[in-house]
Length: 404
Figure (cartoon, rainbow, N blue to C red):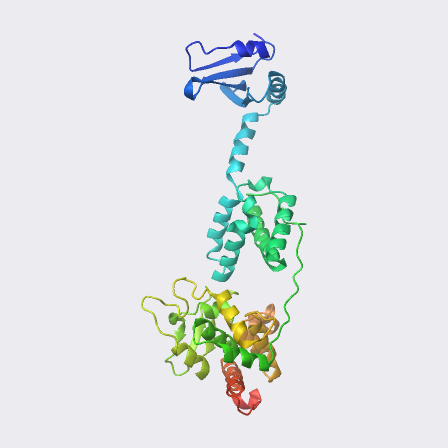
């Protein structure tokens, strides 16, 4: 029987629940009838062949979607590949495997691997940009090999429009890192981020003056946000480092009290110890200790303080300083320390930077933590801040004199 529109329409199951009828003109091409729910008969085109004694079968598509002519053409192509020694069923199996490798499923694997490699703040940022539907949500269900340059570029443009250049650039960076990992793991053969639109982000240059630092300090409320900002001014640390500070990281009762930022929370993966001088120590001791909570700040989140936006808006209203973000404090501390004669390599040590005097081979051989110099510099800086906020006479004492 030749399969035509009329012959196919006349086919019946005849009491069976499953039957296949093959075409006489094109051996291997057939139509399958199966009893479906509600007594309906489902009809689908198939191709069947034998290889090494085993029967292989591929479903071409529904007879309700493909007419017999289109199905026959597709069958000819598949049977032609079989005649050339290829295995079309292997392609289908490979395609099913690739379809399981979606962006969403592999991002979960990527983040699980990176959990032990990235600082919590970096891991949190990668998780936000890769998992939050606001960024690459439309791509989450797509197989990795189907995500093209145009898909990535289109999403970056949307992110740029809705969230700004900075967020778009960081989101692109997170996706680039993810696909680089996929290539190393053999999950992808190309990185679709390469060549995509890359928003230009101008590096922030805002440095608060001494007068502005004084206004910010004076406007800090007696709450978590206020204490954190004052500690940022005194120590020059990153906001997540102070916001997540824990009692277990502190040694306030030692002859020389100190705070050690563990490598798990450090951006460069290096533990970092800073002395706690009287003003910083007084702020830390003023924080009520909560039962069953190691973090000084925040009440619920494991990473510590999280209400940055709310606290900053209230602080802006009180202090009147315009055009600054919390991270600008760190840049301001570094700049103003240099202005009062703290040597650049000591400023870098305070900031826990591994560049400049410890970049490359110099960092391999120079392992000094400059403890005495760091303590002297922070003492001079704290004295300067005290004078500034208490309105006394400002005295700039050379670092060499303090350290001697």
